[in-house]
Length: 349
Image (cartoon, rainbow, N blue to C red; front, side, top):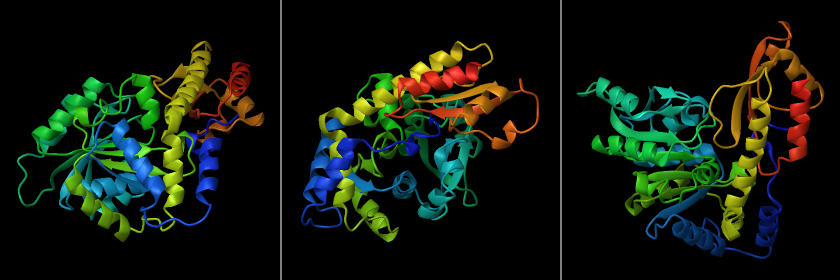
């Protein structure tokens, strides 16, 4: 019973098999391999963006930081949610790679930036003179760090606001596939048609070993990204092992199948939690992540039986058995009904 993170889940066998196949013989390094061309063209097709430039890196932090560094100058600001991964979980990497661009936090509700809050935050710093950071870019996270999903209308509205201030828009799509199947839309509708300029297209959390794509819809930004990736030490020599993962991930819509399985597992888990009188879901459950409070005794039973998920372990010590204790639960493509049902049985008492 592991609901710690989709990062903790296994890679899909088809991805593993593809990496093994890629290990046969020789291939041109640094992203000039045939599998990279296959992955690039597949992503261009999927996104309905034949002119888009596609790059692969091994981590989400690299994808986000390099993408943002290509969009903004060091004297500009990146507007983001207070719970965005680039703010709370990347150890200052976006600031490092951008040369010091300031992250300005925008009010959010259930981790979703709203149009009014974004406009107000931008306007509070205007007019900006020489002594102030300038508007640089907007970064939105889809799925958010609280498990919620932006609607297409909201994404579009935010994008249009950013464009009205001459700012490009970055989408942190570490769980891109989970959001896409939740909305039932196309990749194009969730990105460039909604005024998104650059996407960190995640695969690691959805069945790959470790690969993320950065998709730039403006090809004029490609050369700068390429140099920044190299200078930032994120250009793999044996790049074919990244390419193999991404190519397998996209083949026969595996990426969508895995996201559907992950979301379906969370829907089952969330339904079970809603049925418990002492459980409270803290945010809407719209993809594969849930935040919930359960009585301390319920957590103790689950942890004692081997369940793994994120909460403050100190919350299990002391206090009353019926005190509500918050936790985060995440499902992945390999989560089984049996695991979910066992966990629900344990926390229900």
